[in-house]
Length: 133
Image (cartoon, rainbow, N blue to C red; front, side, top):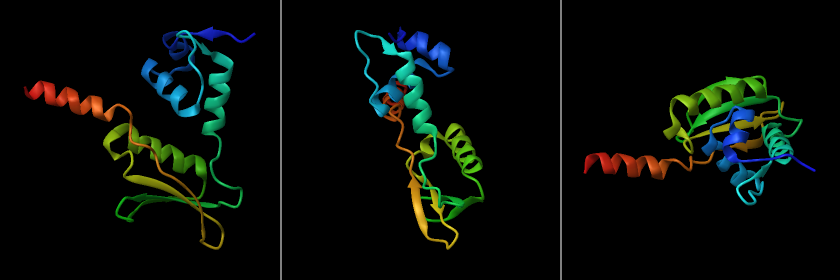
């Protein structure tokens, strides 16, 4: 039988924030039953989501802004994903405005990863509105 934890307990064990655990459960389809999450299912789903989203033919990766301008170019997926993560960590509002594009050796696009806008954005806007009242 799996080990079932609350979002707070799972956040402590996985190194994520509680809210991020809940968002990942929703995003990955991991059920929260009676306020508990199966730790094994969550971690394996999270690991599967973090593995390559691109086909093995991908050998070059570019980060593009929504206007199509090049932000950066990489020869390996790990470096490209790390750069995308740094951008989104420093500028959360950029979510949905940048894309990671994979190309094969001939330059043809073979995949795209566009981060979804954060579920926190409407809440942040509401907080901003409340502070202005």
